[in-house]
View 1: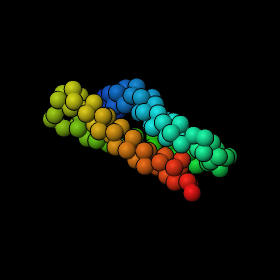
View 2: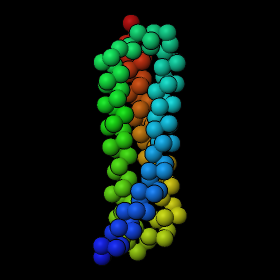
View 3: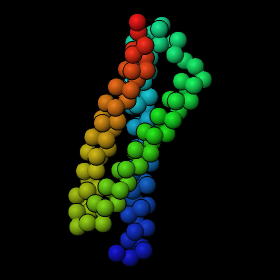
Length: 117
């Protein structure tokens, strides 16, 4: 594998994954917003500076997890299945986003509904 091939794989991965990151973040934000609204007005009480800082940290962690797709993508592009992979890698996006949304559901559920007495 030469430098030109690696550069091509990296460029292709960046073009695909970075154009989809906004949708990933919108899905996760939507899950949090739904839980906030479902727990309203008691969920309003958890809105503190510390809570918002914690939410920011979780958003950064979710975006770091999103980058795991790059490892799979570049590995698959370097294989003999590159053309097939490029047609069907949206499945990894769908599965990964669904997985992250499920994790977000449980975390948001604990944040907004776990404090009920």
